Amino acid sequence: MSPIQQEKIPVFKKWRYWYWLVIGFLLLLMVLFYLFTKHFA
Image (cartoon, rainbow, N blue to C red; front, side, top):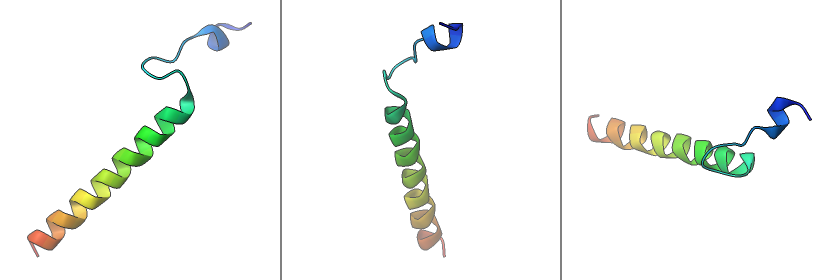
């Protein structure tokens, strides 16, 4: 096995959880920017 395959991913065991975390974070930013623009319009 190569060293890359033996390397453990920190925090989450599967990459799928990282993808969901990033997607959720981006959606949160989109909602926050939308609310800020509505508030200061």
